[in-house]
View 1: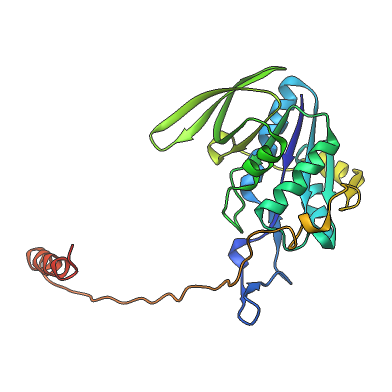
View 2 (view 1 turned 180 degrees about the vertical axis):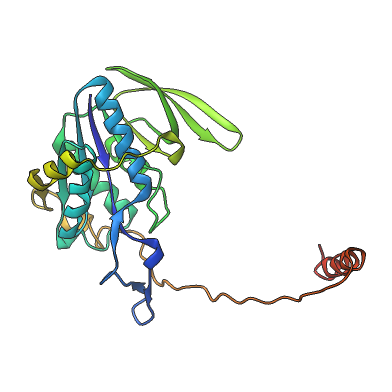
Amino acid sequence: MNIIVCIKQVPDTTEIRIDPSTNTLIREGVESIINPFDMYAIEEAIRLREKLGGKVTALSMGPPQVEKALREAVAIGVDEIILLTDKRFAGADTWATSLTLATAIKKIENFDLIIFGQQAIDGDTAQVGPGVAAFLKLPQTCFVKKIETVDSTFITLQRLMEDGFDRIRMPLPAVITVVKEINSPRLPSLRGKRNAKNAELIIWNADDLKLNENDIGLNGSPTQVIKIFSPDLKKSGQKYELPPEELADILIQKLKELGR
């Protein structure tokens, strides 16, 4: 089984800062990591390959430094890595990103399953996986918590729901996004780290994908971020040191005043 896992390099959320003059994320000097949800996608892809054979290809779009994330994926167990990098890709929203990834996947051609993490922690849209499926006209299931069975033609899986899960059977090839309940990601091995240093990195730009400049990056994005800001955290409240009965009366009165 040949599996493509799409990953994203994101800034470590514990260090995110926003430039007040440009309303953009400050990425200089900020540690970048593989999107945590994508670690579950990588792990699931590797487990399927270990069980069924085949190859796992990690695909990512971003600036040249994303190579670090892709080589980390090799250290974990991925077989092949492809980086989509071009200044013309910059500023892409989820639509333009999905189109670019889908076009690259068409160029790869030989695949049975495409796996995404449920969402990226820097955007939290959860739109790219479904977007890629739409561009490729493939069946899709999001929020997968377990893959039950898979063969050369069908996959049966469990989709996480608020009150349990749905069991779904889909024909292959297909697209899925996975949640953290699906597995426990492994750590890079010593052999994997050695392999990562020597792994061939395939790099494609807009010309390699034969993409029109008006369809990619900022030009091809129907949505644009006008402003990013950190909310003001205003803490207010009152402290009472009274017997429980009196505190209950005060609480009831406050709720009435708020119309609750």
